[in-house]
Image (cartoon, rainbow, N blue to C red):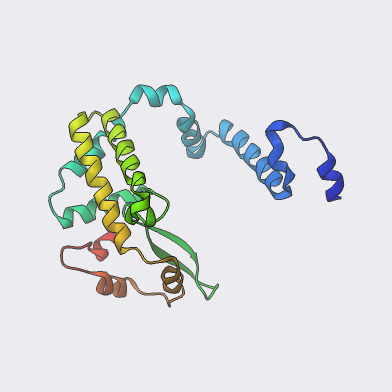
Length: 211
C-alpha cells in the first residue's frame, strides 16, 4: 500500500502528504478553515479579524497603545507583578510560561509552570561569546518594532538594549534541559507551596498572580 502511494504524483502544494498523518492534518486544517470562514459566532469573528489585513494595517500600533503606556508607568515590583498577571490572562506569557496537562498520575490534570521569556532559541545564544551576533540581531529587531510603534530611534535602541539585558538575565537563571526534566517529574505543589518556595524580596507575588 505504501509503495503504491509513494508512486503517485502529488500536487506540488501537497508534498507534505508524502507522510500519511501530515495528509490527515492538512485535510483537518482545510475543514477548520472552511468552518471558521462561515461561523457566525466568536470563533468565526476572531478568525476573520486575524485575516483582515486591511483593518490591521489601518489600525497600526494604536491598539497596543494602552498596554505600552501601562508598561511605561511601572514603578515597582508589585506593579510589575500585576502587569505580568494581566498579560498572562490575555495568553501573552511574559517572563515564564504555563500549561495544563496530565500529571504523572494520569487521573489528574495539573498546571505546569515553566521557564520562559527568551526570544532566541536557547540560553547559549545569550551566554556564549561565539553567538554574540544573535543578541545584537535581536536588539536590532526589537528596536525596529519599537520604531514602528512610534518610539524615536534613539529611545528605541535604548529600550531594545534593555529588553536583551533582561532576557540575558533570565537565560543566566534558566535550568539546563536535564534539570528541567527532573523538575517536571517532581510531585505537584499547592499554590501556597509555590508562593512560599518561590517568593523573593522584591519578586513576583505568586498569590496575586494566581488570584
